[in-house]
Image (tube, rainbow, N blue to C red; front, side, top):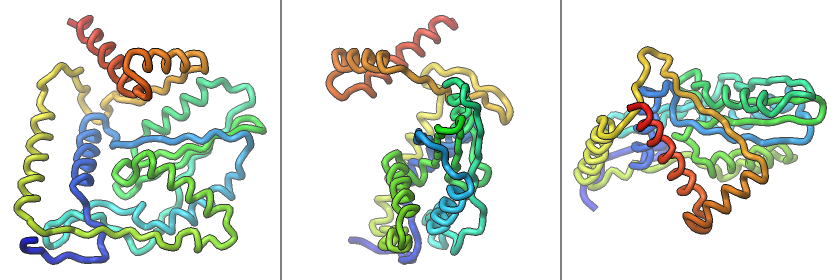
Length: 271
């Protein structure tokens, strides 16, 4: 077991995976001006009550002070997620209103802006967007920080909010939710060397060992998400080709390989 360094049982200490994810977030902020973020979009066949949505979201998010935390180090130099005792900031809900005849490109443009907008503060990790189209259609979007959520976690968070907003006794929905994690500060030297190896690998990957596009100078890095959608027929063709060339349920590796091949051709043309 080895020597165990004292730590607090009430804190949410970072694991090795957390260290790596925070490093990736830092690297992305230094190159693209935005952190490691993702977006979930829910399409609805009705309009949402803006005030009711904001009130319920605000009350729900305040039940999770960790959503307004940030990384700090304790006296033993162990990084942990500092969680405020209570949430005082207002919920960030941006609302867009489109006409009935708005085209899909208008919606994708707004969603793209939402995905490309950095969080306003270091302790902000969620941003909500509502797009109201005409009188019978709306889209609800959540941009989330990967330091707190992976895709499955973000979906689970939205599902919990749905249960919370429709429950008669909302406190019962949140029972059993605990946000603490042990420091596991035993065998400290082994973990120190493991962290050192990760840091050295990150440094080696940061060097231009392969072809890269030149980075613009200044705060405006010029990197943005570009949303591209496919209709049903195009999607079927993509899946058929992925299954035939890469294998069953291998559409993601197939798409990644196609993107890499395309980018490689762009580098060749730039020579």
